[in-house]
Length: 164
Picture 1 (cartoon, rainbow, N blue to C red):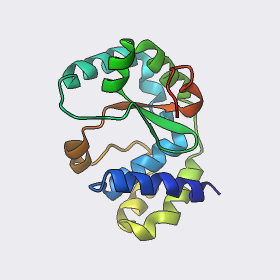
Picture 2: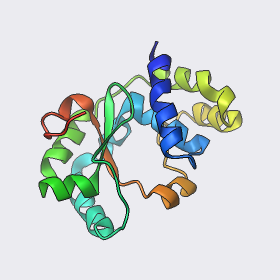
Picture 3: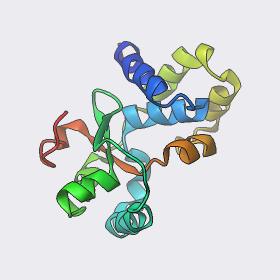
Picture 4: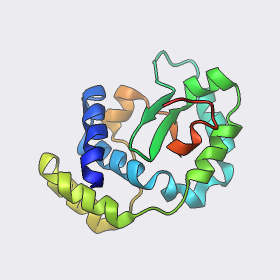
């Protein structure tokens, strides 16, 4: 079942990002199952937003991987190392847009039910009850790890000349 292989990615992220909160775990599961589908209505100006975000972070003294696997289906592609490698966000934005398909919201909720005994059950229950899949990283995570990436289907990584 999806839960078993998802746990591998969760454990890797908990090791890599020990300050992850339940909110960040929910975001990881949401992205790993749904990818960027929750942003379908907001993708028209992605290239401009990504370019502006890169301008804000290009001088940060932080090391990111270019690609970080978040599930068997999706990966995070970090803006700073990607742009430094390619000098062009258009292929990444194209892959992001093509990755934005409606996913299985029921699978997300079922998967979160299966892990809530390890995390803040009340937070997960409230998230599921809200019916709103949109969630941000926690302030703690953002401050500690400064995440700046786009989520894309793993099948597009080869088109971006990125290896798994």
